[in-house]
Image (cartoon, rainbow, N blue to C red; front, side, top):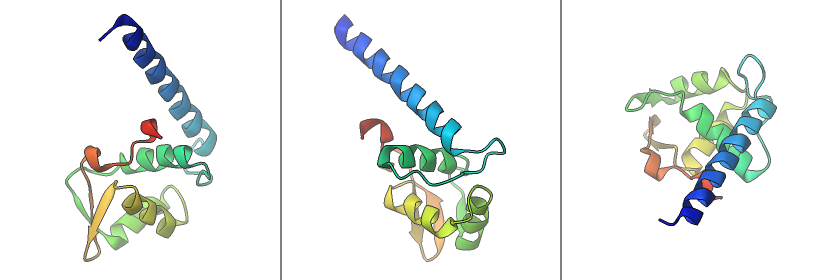
Length: 111
């Protein structure tokens, strides 16, 4: 890889980290709740990924457990649960939810 490409990747990584930090700061309250679901697609993906990363990888959750988990962060658990599925963070089979591997997640960095 050329030095110019390496520098461009470093700049992109720095910009992505800055954007992620800004979204978390602007959309999450001091006590960790999601104040509102971001309307902008990229920001919404950052918020959804932040939440789903708090789940246990490999654990299977009932719908009731997922709803309770999401309600810790936002009252509209149905919308957020749907976002988890739509963007590949989780899969659902007979009301059992499980986190997908990261390679299946919609990558906000690529949006």
